[in-house]
Image (cartoon, rainbow, N blue to C red; front, side):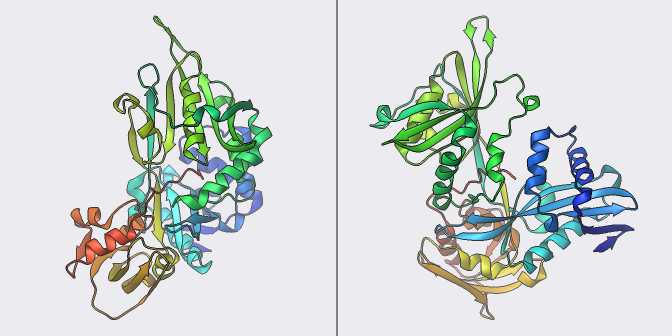
Length: 413
């Protein structure tokens, strides 16, 4: 429990959830949540990690966290707090409500022994001051399938595709997702109830598109991939002009993924394939004949915050040997401030306090950006956000922090 400017911050009680969720929705400028979305939100809420700020009888602030495990470079999984459901009533802006919730939340995350926190930001400018750095990006595209063709790898024609009801193959699709989680930094292992998120399909959010559809790919009798999508039929004076709206897609191998893309390109009466969140190194970029007519767009996605610098940097591996001392600045979580020696290679790492001279100076925000290997320390240094104190240390550390595949966060929360 805590107070700030006459308000009271405390853990949410179960009988307060409906009001808390309505307050959250109002904060995001939305109307009542669809029933199936609301039901899932309550099922996944961790009440002991959900915070409410009260001003007398008025609920004026919300924040929550989920207990996840996130893949880091090297394939290991680190415990991570998924920060979510953050809102402040418009009547209580600039009164310290958000800062009080972030303070309490990060203290709790540290007490739980989670070295990392992660969030997706509706307003990115907000979270930098709390030590979160942009760590993953997502690629979206509007692909003109009338003018763009695919160059497919051998074996694609042998993949069997079939329509199925999304709920009927949920377990098989989840098994595909689970197999992919260790392969890419930033991916989150599913927790109980989260598998239902794939099936949430309220009519109010379709904007005239079809109900959710699913096609699975099979090789040797096993499901090796799937795509969930909607179709929105439209007509122009020249004929059919519909759009395939891809919700999510996964394949265990290049041939399966190519077969799914071929299917999406070939749906009758559709002239555009719209994809909203794919990794920046996604395979389709190398299958298409004309990238420009795919209208690719890049956007920030996951923001990472190192809550325990030593534990977080020790939890991942490094693609080249590294021995570097960081001078870390962390005003919001001062237990991280000071010098840390990181030694590591592709087999493992350790990061401990040291009194040795620093090689690089940076804030915890930059460490969060570089943590998953998608943002280089060299690029951050070019903006003046990392200072090299020992010649050669910057290149050494930047190469070591890299990842052979781009980090990506396909799991919404």
